[in-house]
Amino acid sequence: MFGKSLEKAYIEVLAGDNAGKQIKVLFNPAEYSLERSNAYKTTPLPGLGGPLIQFVNGDAATLSMDLFLDDWTDPNGPPGDFLPFASGSGKSVKDRIDEITLLLDIDPQLHAPPPVRFVWGPLRFRAVVEKLSRKPSLFRPDGTPARAHLTISFKGFTPYDEDAPKVRLESADKTKRRQIGAAETIWEIADTEYGDPRHWRVIAAASDVDDPRALVPGDWLKVPPLEVSNALNRAN
Image (cartoon, rainbow, N blue to C red):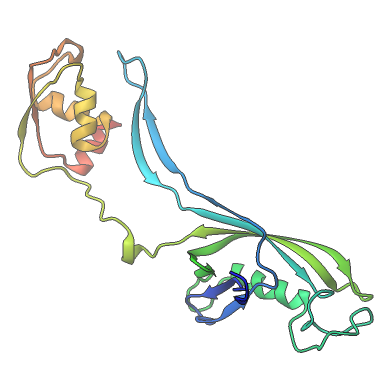
């Protein structure tokens, strides 16, 4: 580890007018937070002790961190009254803030903020900038920020035509017979076969079931093909 040069993190613009541009951070973050969650739908059903829980989709991951900007400790920063040692060849805190803030603006080519990738060693996080807050704490005589803390959040981004799953909205094309298992209900069968327990009426109508609570394990049901428009009308 000793003797190796410090690898700097950077934000790479992936598309739009500034595609390929790399925005290097002045100081690597001291830490970062990476969060991911799933969304579930609960459906209360009569006769059950608890609701059915159905997976809906995975939420996009979020990467959050604090970045520190400081002209005073940047030898390449712009010279000033209190920075006599600076070479003036680098970017000021204001320039760095403006450069990152532009990632929230709508790109003329994309008609949306550009996708980016945050890269730091093995971490390669493709995302869009979701939120940015800045807190200047030191200023030049004219009020220009010379030191600031940025809190930035990236929302994981995947192009729809690249990795998005192909959602199947209809069931199998043929009617099939299904036997009720132990401790199983018509609502659970509808959830398994159609992905929504509210479609139990489709099965009940095909199987001539008047009272779904009268069904017992071992009974046979007909599970017909699910027409999306008709099923939605019956479920509502």
